[in-house]
Image (tube, rainbow, N blue to C red; front, side):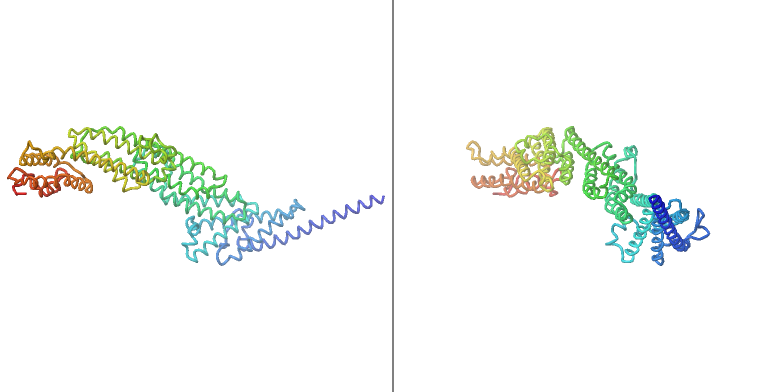
Amino acid sequence: MVLFTLSTTSSSSSKLKQHSHQSFSESLMEHTIEDAESIIHRWISPEHVHSSSFCFISSLFSTENREEAKRFIDAVTTLHSGMIRLISVNPTSMKLVKAENLMRISMTHLSKEFYRILKSNRRYLDPESVSIRSSKASDSDSDSDSNTMDDLKMIADCMISSGYSKECFKIYKRIRKSIINEALNQLGFENLTFSQIQKLEWEVMEKKIRKWLRTTTRAVNTLFSGEQILSDHVFSSSSSTIRESAFAEITSQTALALFTFPEKMAKCRKSPEKIFLTLDVYQTIVDLLPKINELFSSDSTSTVRSQVDLTLVNLREGVVSMIDEFESSISKESSKSLISGGGIHQLTRYVMNFIVFLADYSDTLSDIISKPSLPSPEEEKDSGDSSPVKSRISRLILFLLCKIDAKSRLYNDVALSYLFLINNVNYVVVKVRSSNLKTVLSEDWVKKHEAKVKKYVAKFEEIVWGEMMTSLSDDVTMTAEEGIKRFSDGFEEAYKRQTGWIVPDSKLRDEIKRSVGMMIIPRYSGFCERNRVRLLENVGFDPEDIGNYLSDLYFGSGGSGSGSSVHSSGSSV
C-alpha cells in the first residue's frame, strides 16, 4: 500500500514537471514568435503574410539597413532554434504551426533577397572582379564587394541552418552558372560539335584555336578561380562537400566544354602545318595544370580532371602523328626539277624552317616524345647522350640530307652538283647554328656538318679550277707563253661556265672566292714573274684582274651588277 502511494506520487510529480516544461517552452516560443513577427512585418506587408505572394517595402540588405538585416537574421535563427526545442518536448503544439508559417514566409523573403543580391550586383560578383579585387579594385569598390559577399554568406548561413539549403543552392547555382556562361560567350568561345569542327577550313579553325588559347587561360586563372573564391566565402560555414558541390555544378559543364574542344581538334585530320598550334594548346594546358588540379580537386569535379588527362593524351598522339606525317612527306618528295645555278632547293628551305620552329618547342616535345625513334647511323655511334627529341629531329634532318644528296645527282655537271650540295648543306648548318636547334643537336653536330661543307667546297674548287692550274707548272715541253695562254683559256672557260651559278649565303660566297683567289692569284703572279713573261694582247690576263673577275662570280645569272666581261689583258706584268 505504501509502495503504491509512493509510485502514484512519483508519476504525478513527473507529469507535473513535463507539463511545466511544455508550458515554459510554449511560453518562450510565444515570445519568440512575437519578436520575429514584429521584425518580419517591417519588411513584409502584413496583409500579405498569409498569402502566396507578397511585396517588399524596401531592400533589407541595403547599406542603410545593414543593422536591421542582422536583427532579421538573428530573429529567424532564434525562431528556428525555438522550434527545435519545442518539437523535442511537444511535437503537436499549435505554436509550431504558426512558427512554421512564419519561417516559410521568412525563407521566401530571404530567397528573394538572395536572388536580388546575386542578380543586381553582377559588377561586384563577376568572377574576374572577385579574383583580382585586391589589386585592381578601388577601396570603395572593395568595400561594396566585401559587403555584398558578406550579405550572401549571411543569408546562405541562415537558410542552410534552417533547412532550406536546397532552395538556397538552386538560386545560387542558376545565377552563377549563367554568369560563367555569359562571360565565356563574351570571350568568344563556341562549344562546337566534332562534326562542326571537322567541316571547318584550317584558316577558320586556326582563329578559333587562338581564341580558345586566350579564353581558357582567362577562364582558369580568373573566371573559375574567382568563382571558387566566391563559393568558398558564401558557403564557408557549410561543409567542404557542400562548397565543392556548389562550385562543381556551376563550373563543371563549362570546363568540360572548354577541354573537350582540343580533344575534338586532335581527332580531326592531321597535317604537319597544324602541329605548332597543337603544341601551343598542349603547352597551355600543361602550364595551367597545377591551377586546374587545384580548382577541380574534389570528387565532384573528377570528370574535369579526367577530361583534361584524356585531352592531353589525344594531343600527344596528334603531335607524334603529325611528325610522322612530316617525315613521310620528306621521304616521298620526288620532284626532278633542277634549281638554277645550284641554289637552295625549296624542300631544304621548307623542311629547315619547319624544324627550326619545332626546336622552339623542344621542352614541350620532351614531354610528348617519350621514346627515341630508330637512331640514325650517326646516332648509333654516339647514342649515350641522345635524347628522344634530339633523336627525332636528327632523323628528320638526316632524311633531308639524303634527299639533298639524291637531288645533287640530277645535275650533269659534277661541279654544279657539288655547288648544290654546298649551298643546301650550308643552309642546314646555318639554320641549326642560328637557332635553338644548336642546343638540341649540340655543337659537335654543327662542327661535324660544317666540316662536310668544307669538304664539298674543296672538291668543288678542285673540279672547277684544278685542271687549269697544271698550266702553271715548270713543264720543259711547254713555253711560258703557251702556259699562260693555256691558263687564260682555262680561266675564261671556267668563268663563263660559272656566271649563272649562285651562292646565296654572302659569307660562304666570300669564303669560296677568297679561297679560289688564294689558290690562283699568287701562283699565276709567281709564274709570270719567274719566267719574265710579257703578256701580249689576247694572250693572258693581268694578275691584278683575276681578283676582279672572281669577285663577280656566284651571284646568279645577274652577276654582281658590275657588268664585267672576260677578256685577256694587254698590259704587262
